[in-house]
Amino acid sequence: MHVFLFTDTLIWIPAHSNDLSTMKIRLLIALTALLVCFTAQAQTPSPTAPASTPPATDSSQASSAAYQSIDPAKAAEIRKMLELTGTVKLMKQVMNQMIDSFKTRNSHVSSEFWDRFESNLDTNDLVDKMIPLYDKYYTLDDLKAINAFYESPAGQRVLAVTPQIMHESMQIGQEWGRGVGAKIATELEKEKLKEAAAAPSSTSASTPASAPASTPTPTSTATPASTPPGQ
Image 1 (cartoon, rainbow, N blue to C red):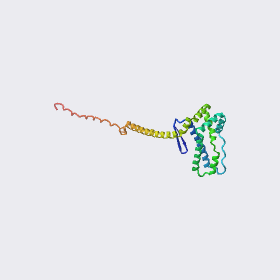
Image 2: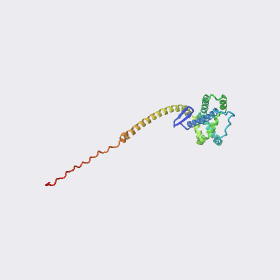
Image 3: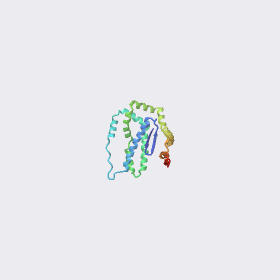
Image 4: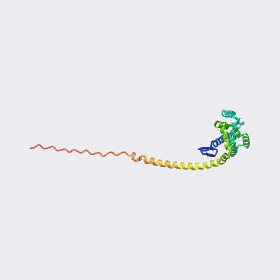
């Protein structure tokens, strides 16, 4: 089972979900982190001068280098897969929803900031950064087969019903979890009662054993001295 948290939304994914569903959620997590970072900067603007653009990190440079080294035909198949599975569309939808949420929570931030932010935000940049990850785990033949499946009627059916299956699976999982929790609580209570019954009584353990009554020593009786005969 996988559990992910997006701001105020908890997403529960059954362990049997396919890899693409999990990868889709990971893409959204990365998008969330990006938006949180920009919102934090918006809440603490510099009083004297606009914040300078931070230099590219080693990880971003490595990601760019990795992307450049990927076979263009393979990169195209990865992009096609993300489009077919609705990942790119979902990213854009979530991005817009989250920006609206941040706008509501940060009403003191000027609208010019949000306009500037949205105009500079391109989800294709995130896709470019994720392509090396797909390249790492899928071969070109894998990607072609996956895309062929999702272009088929069966694949389109999977894409259509997966959201509802995940929703209903979430409900089933919550109900199952409540049952497991109740069972654990019952078994724990039984175990406590069992341990309490097996423990020695505190009263008997603290009372010392009484000493046996001592037998009194018999008192000796003095014998009077005998009178000599003839006296």
